[in-house]
Length: 105
Image (cartoon, rainbow, N blue to C red; front, top):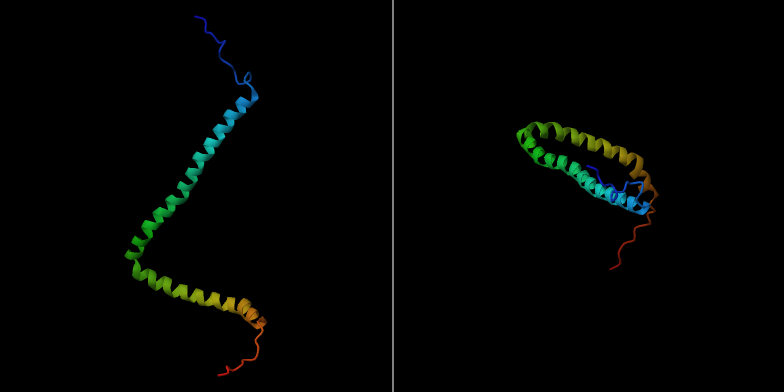
């Protein structure tokens, strides 16, 4: 049995624009599909955290509040002091202040 290969073309025998067009379509499709997976990989962990953090917080609420509340306030006060020293005091000193005029009735 002899196979007839007259109608089959190899990729080298096809015109270049047809080969590149097919490759372009293939790459475009892969880009669209993989773009969807990117959002899946970003949203999946966020969804898991969204549902697990409240449950964990309710279970250990007293410990979290005692530990996190005190530490958070100390850290916030420390960061504000640094911000006030380095930035706010310099900015506020550069703002011109005129003499306060009393309102005339």
